[in-house]
Amino acid sequence: MTDSTHGIIFNIQRFAIHDGPGIRTTVFFKGCPLRCWWCHNPESHKILPEKFDGCNLRRGFDQSFSMDKDKVGMEISVDELMKEIIKDRIFYEESNGGVTFSGGEPLMQPRFLAELLKECRANGVHTSVDTSGYASTDILNKIADNTDLFLYDLKLMSDDDHQNFTGVSNQVILKNLNELNQLGKKIIIRIPIVPELTDTNENLMAIRGFVSYLNNVIEVNLLPYHRAGEGKYTKYGKENKMIKTESPTSKSMENIQQIFNDLKCKVKIGG
Ligand code: SF4
Image (cartoon, rainbow, N blue to C red; front, side):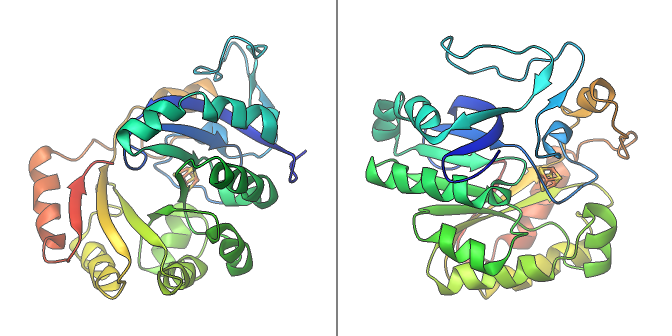
């Protein structure tokens, strides 16, 4: 069940330092409408908890939570989750950190997310929403009210390529990004650098062009594809279409960084 009191998540990572500013707790929502070829979290795709043999993706949880070794995903209440989030408030305060709602796609559980954001705001916890942007504009607008920062993915500017390699059109994603910018929300753009798919000169130049018109982008993160998620495809019996793809070299990441260097905001390799 997912509503304003309960939702489904598959992990909580404490002391995260790559999901927004400072020290953060990252909450991974289950469910994603996209199917990116390079996804590191294929176990996040379906919204409902799934049974697998011998898995335990509840690492990072407090001992007070019961463990279920064969399941990815669990239902959790807003109250339970807020208790986990609040625990590290001292670290957020000292580092200008907070909580990041990631996934999967957090906007797939809008009522649960909205309630968590409201509670975080009431408790003075800084919030980031890490999103593909693939959701109705109405939902995004409602979520934006209590969100301090968006980590917003831009993957492929050609709509055909976007459909081929993520399974969905990029039209609503680009529209929503414009919308957030007009609302004056702070945005960090995250670009997965995937050899031969997203790292073509044409695609990166098109992203740079689009971003250059947005005045609320505070940073661009270039995220090199890595093979860390590979084992999960075998483990969860999912097809891995990236089996032969290597991570980009440091040199090629530096070259890509140059493409974005004339933007007014900070451009960083990594999150
Ligand atoms: S949007 Fe993120 S979680 Fe969803 S399929 Fe793409 S990489 Fe995976």
